[in-house]
Structures are given as C-alpha cells and as structure tokens.
Amino acid sequence: MDEVVAEYIRRTVLKIPRGEIKTMLQTWGFLSEAQLQTVNFHQIKENISQDVVRLCEENSAGIKQAAVLDIIYNHTYSDKRVWSVYQMNKTGEETEFFDLTDFKKKFKRRLRSALKNVTINFRECEDNSIWIRIAWGTPYKKPNQYKSSYVVYHSQTPYVFISASMLKSNLPLLCQALVVASNYRDIREMELRSHSLNSLKDIVFKRYSQNFQTYYPRPLQERNVAPESADLRIVQENRHEKERIQRVNRKVFGDGPQPKLEFAQYKLETMFKSDPKMGVLDKKEPFRCLVKFSSPHLLESLKSLAPAGMADAPLSPLLTCIPQKARNYFKIREKKGIFPGSFVSP
Amino acid sequence: RGKMDEGKAYSPGGVFAHLEMLEARACEAATKKEETERQEEKLARLKARVEELRLQRDELQAKVDLQQKRQLGKEGVASAPAQPSAQAVLEWKIKSVEAMLQVFYLTGISGKLTKLGVCFCISTAYEGTYLDSYYLDLLTKPEVQIHRHSVPIFIPLGQIAKKYLQTDIRRFLSVLSDHLNAYAGRRYQADQLQEHFSDQIEGTLQRNSLCNLLVFNYNVSSKRKTFLFNVRLLYGDLCCSLPTEVVISCTPDAPASLAEMAAAHSDLFRRVALHKAFRSFSSAEENMD
Image 1: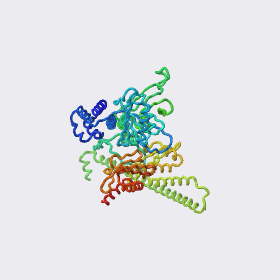
Image 2 (image 1 turned 90 degrees about the vertical axis):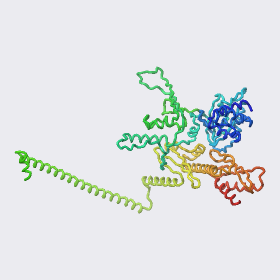
Image 3 (image 1 turned 45 degrees about the horizontal axis):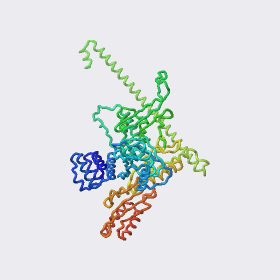
Image 4 (image 1 turned 180 degrees about the horizontal axis):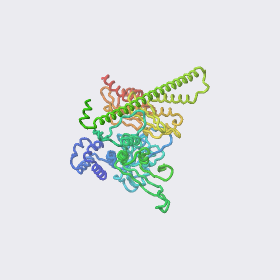
C-alpha cells in the first residue's frame, strides 16, 4: 500500500473521537467485521490508528477507499468546516430526470480535462445528498489530500454547498464543472456562510419553521415558561408589554428552532450624519464601517433579545430578514430604502 | 323617662343637652330621608327613560322591517330588475368568494386574508393519511406575487407561478396542490417501503429529492429459491403518484419463469401504491407455500 495513503488513513483515524472510531469504520465498510473485532478500541488512539492501517494494508487500500473514509468523517463532523452556498440558474423548463451516473461522468471529465492531477471521489449519503471530494494538484505536483474541497449537492435543487480550502484559482474550475454536470447555465455565490451545513440547507430549502397566518391554530410547542408564582402577592406589572413582545417575536421568528448561523456582517457605505456645525469630516464621502454580529447561535440569540429586555420588539428588519433573504452578509448603501443589498452578478 | 333621669344624674343642664341631642338626631333623620327620596326619584326617572328608549327602538325596528319587506315586495313584483345595485353585486361577490373558500377547504386548500394579501395553506394527504402542509404568503398589490412560502425548492413553483399566478389563481393553486400532493404521496410510499419491507430490499433504496426516480433491489422467491430483482421506477408525471415507467431486470442466471413474475410485478407497480404492492407479494407468497 502506498505510504501516502497509509499516512493519510492514519491521520484521518486520529481525527475521529475515540468512541466513534468503530462506528465510522463500520459505516466505511472497507474492513470486515471480523477484522474490526481484532482491534482494541479502548487503547490510545495512536495505537488504534496503527492497527487500522495494518488492516487496511491487508486489504490493499488505495486512495479511493481512503477518500471515502474522509468523506464519511466530514459528513459526520461537517460543522468543523465553513460552508458557502452557491446558486445555479438554468433556462428552460424541462423536468430533468437526474441521472447520477451521467452527473459523475460529466463532472469528472470536465475537471480532468483542465487539470491532470486531481483526485475526485463521490458518495451518496442517506439524506439524499451527493458528496464530492476533490483533492487538488498542479501540473507538476500530486494532489494534496490534506487540503481537499468538499461539495454537497441535492439533486433537482439549484443549490450547491461548497467547503473550499483551496487556491482561489481552482474555484472557477470547480463551479464550471458543477454547472456542466448538472445541466445548468451558470452559478453564483450567495452571501450566505456558516459552519452548520444542515442549517444552510434548512434556510435555502425552506425547511425552517416560518410563522404563517392560518385559521387553524397549530399546537403550541413546549416552551420554557417560568411557572407563574403561586404567591398572589407577586403581580406582573408589565404583563401586557411582555405578551406583546412574545406575540411579535413569535410572528417574526416562528415557533420552531432557528437555523444555526455564527455571524451576520453589515458593510456600511453610508454617509456619516452629524451636526453640520460640528464638521467632523472634511470630505463628503461615505463613512466606511463594518458591523459584525457573532454568536454561537446568532438567530436564537436575536430571538431572545426582546423577551430578555435587551432590545425593543420588533427588531430591525435588517436582522430578522436573514433566513428569508437567505443571506448573512449585507452591504448597506445610502439612498432608496433600508437596504438595497448587494447582488453579485450571476 | 329613664333618659331624663340619666340627664339629671350627669349634669345640671342635662335637659337642654338632651333636647339638643334629640334635635340633632331629628335633623340627621330628615337629611337621610331626603337623600333616599332623591335617589328613588332618580331611579324612577331612569326607569322611565329606559322605557322611552325601548319604545323608540321598537319603532325604528318596525320601520326597518317594513322597508325590507317593501324592498322584497318590489323585487317580487318586477319581472327583471333593470340593474342590480352596486351593494347587491358586492354582496354576491363576497358570498361567492366565501363559497369558493369553503370548497377549497374541502379540497385541501384553505386561505386567510392578511393585511397585505392572502395566506394559503395547502394540505397534502395520501390515501387517507394526512401528510405535511405547505404555506404560501401572497401579496395582492400592486400585482399578485409570492411574498414568502414553505414549498420545497425542488417543486417547480417558479414555473407554475409564471404560468398561472397572474391570470388564474384558482388554477395556480390547483396545479401546485397537485404537485405537492403527488410528491407527498410518492415520498410516503417510499418511506413506507423502507419502514415495513426493509427485509425484502437488498442494499439501499436510491431515490432523488422529488422521489420521482426510485431504484432498488428486492428479493423474490420462486420454488423455494430466492432471486434478486432490480427495479427502476420512473414517475414521469410530477402530478401523479404512480410510476409512468417500470423496468424490472433480473440476474442472467434466473430461470425463464421469473420473467412472467417480473411482468406481473411491473404491471402491479404501475397500478398500485408501492407499499401495497409489496404487501400483496408477501401475502401471495404465503398463499403459495
């Protein structure tokens, strides 16, 4: 077995938390159950990884099998990477019967025609997604397996999720190959990025809970409501206001869990408004400013701002429009309404 | 007499003091009496007023009734009204819209007016089982447009909207509902198959987002031996929950009798829901053994 492959498998196994190694190897399916029985998964990871490499050698593992293990790892721990969303456009109305074999063939052919040294692997995962792993090389160097890019695609949707850790020069090539393989016309990057791949999917596939007005009240989900004090001497002074805030919040954010985003960034290109007599700025040019909101879970924290009394309800539409506009990077310019936003040309 | 004795007992000027006290009491009593009388008067006046108002109301009601009867009477007499009043037309429109909403509710589409338009709810169901609901928030000014929605991205909402949203909203909703119900039905069948017949399926059930292409392998037994069938179900019509094309293939070493079974299965898949077809396989096998 190739030394590069052996080392790569060893390092991949080392990344996996010890308690998960056995399950992941079983999902991988490259080592038989009997072989897995011979490994002691309670020893230190260093030793486990060496045992696994030894078994892989018995089965003559190649880069293809190693790549599949890497895909499985990244599928399980997709939150460790930052994902961007790309949207594809097509002309025409034909209902395509998505042919996976055809897709793979076209993608590989397109990529390989431009770049000789590239490793491409596919895997269909349980949630109907197609994972593509690409390791990039140059005409003179073999592909670097440790800096692979990952593409996640759901058939019959115009969205592609890319986690790239590659030279910027390879990105257009990747986009081109995707467009050709999926029979679309062009592709553009959306202003939407996050660590949580599932949340990005929720946003663009409209799987997150939105609050729609209907005649049929849906059952209220369990909320963490502080129990009303049994002591009648304690009276809620601002009960009406609190209820109003709850109502407005529910209307804006819906009842269910919010998609998980880590930041929202607003790039201001607006004029500084001050007292003309103060004359802070000599020149009349836009005041460049970047406002960035960060949080382990931005939308949930925005949702809890008003009930916690830290902001007025309703919140600014600049903050609440994030899931609906499917973007968390904004450019705010001067005139015409609140936010024209920036639309990267397709 | 007892009191006078008391006065004598306490002070020399007791009689006068006593008289003063009696006077004061009499004054109090008189004031109270006046007060009560005034209140009674007031009450009586208010009661009279209530009666007055009631009478007025009855009179007015009678007038209104009379007018309405006259109106009806006129319409009954005239053979054909020259032109229905604007009011009547509006009332008729409202009634017909209400009736339409009622009908739509029964077909799984319901709507609610919002501040800026309408919010529709399309409920899906398959053979008696209720499945997901999808929502469309429409704006009606300046033209009908979709503000927000929860329709899955792989349903061709844009195409359907382009065709019908501006011109025929009823058709738009109907076509969209067909798509969603068919998708829900196809997905339900595939889920049911995976849930209840996983022992007959070999490997994974390959499906796509719209669930309109299913490919899988399943076991069939013939003469106590099991063989593997590979089936490819293509649902060409997105508004239909039954496949338009079924291709069943078996391994080259399979006996010829299996071809008959494959044809029978193919026909069954085209006519019957997927999980029901599989249910009939297992019962047929039971009968054979």
